[in-house]
Image (cartoon, rainbow, N blue to C red; front, side):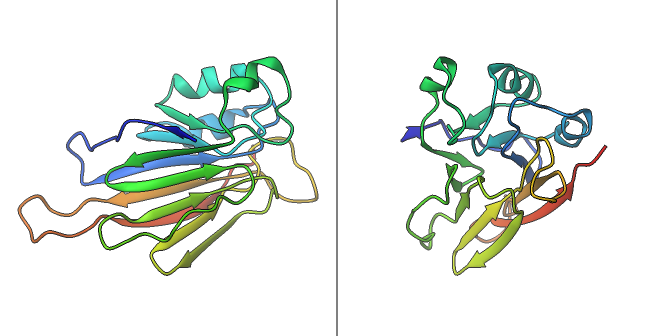
Length: 174
């Protein structure tokens, strides 16, 4: 499993993570537009081409995993599962729903997956499960979507609290 250095807020009380999956080698202009201004990007596999990751890295740091369609040599360096900490929240990413323990009292957990092309957000105790749907070509009659994950940081001058997470599915049709 790949681990990345924690990302801490610059000065804003809210960090935003753009979450996408199943691009299958395509990055549509609307998807790129929706990702502008995010603090981090998570790609949950079936990237399809290295140029997709290059374009995403021009926007923000990227955590990406290999999907079941990522067979080419360039994808061999992508992990099957990755983990990154953003604003005190542990994000575990895998193409097929990742397995990880629930968030403890100290570290909330977000589990990100793709593969199904079916967007979903589900809170399970201290864990937020998130599938952004597909940001690539439309398949299975499902719309193109991404997700935005917001991490609300506790006030620096307030009582100690853990960060709060919310996620929404965002339509990404042209």
